[in-house]
Length: 173
Image (cartoon, rainbow, N blue to C red; front, side, top):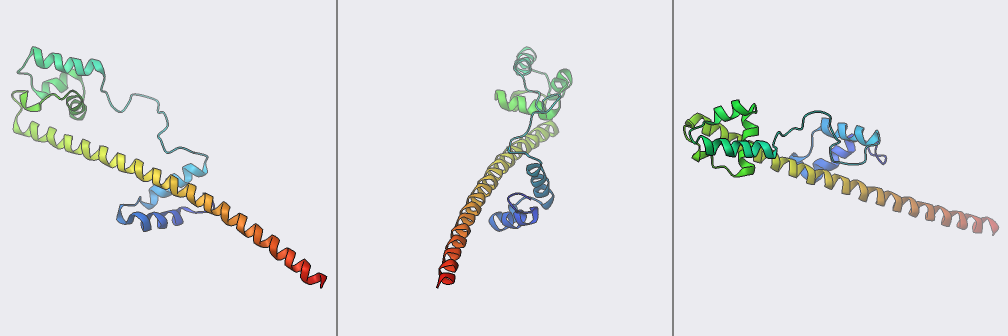
């Protein structure tokens, strides 16, 4: 439990604020568990192994060089020669603003696939940004709730002290 609030209460609060766009029950439970185990940040931790993206300056310059050397090279040949996926190629193209239509001999299926992957990539980036904003909002809500709980505890303590004084006064009469 975080600040005395369980995952179910957090989920209810999120559904009230965000409606259908709120996180799933499983995701809320997982994050609550992580924070209970001592996690303090929303950012991902460092991971071991190959980075998710294979974009490097050598890759981008190699693609640009190959396209300039052989204007008839196809996307399939580029991907095969560089040992990367279509999505990685798409990321490279997007980073370097290489016009896909300038690469000759792309059949309609290849162009359609690459455009679809580009849309998916943009959608994933948009969702990631929204998720980060959402998690920041959750963090802010948690901080505000903690502040209010402290304020409430202070008020309760003051009230108890006043009642004790009144009881002492009544007993002394």
